[in-house]
Length: 197
Image 1 (cartoon, rainbow, N blue to C red):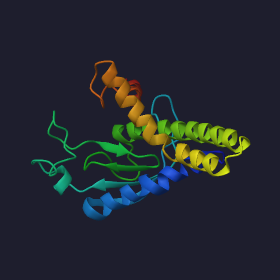
Image 2: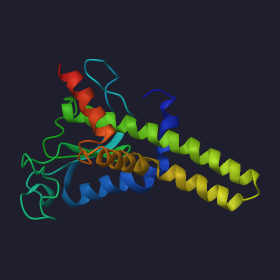
Image 3: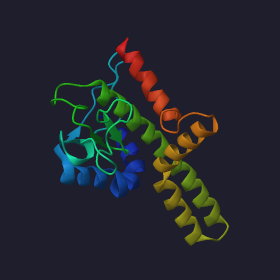
Image 4: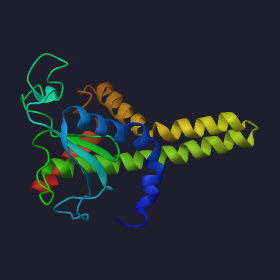
């Protein structure tokens, strides 16, 4: 990891500490295995990579989320294929389905895909940091230090969430399915197809 990548960790810190890492730890505690920090390979046009190291785990095969059944049982099973999802990214935290990640030295297509989402999350958090800081400074200069601080912290913290909601709403407004039509999912799939050939 490059030394400058710590800047991206800093701007993603509120989301990672409040959401990403606790959710990964909760999934690991309830249904998971193989908790570890996962560092992607250096970026390569043909192999992918990129995004910072992430706290990751894998959901156990035949555990509650991936066992077929009526919701909430089987909540991590893809309806169309009946197979578990490959993985879910929440900033610098990822939890994989039972088949989304192999050994430490094997890099799967799912891992490459999820690390595209890590990069997207880093962009969203940097944008929300800059917008939040700018808003906070304006309010501070107008004599509202508490409002300025609260706006900065709020906008900074919810950057990743805003990225997701904006992508889903935009997809629906275009007449597409919210998840599959969202620009961040379309982008990750497009980059996956480039890697596959």
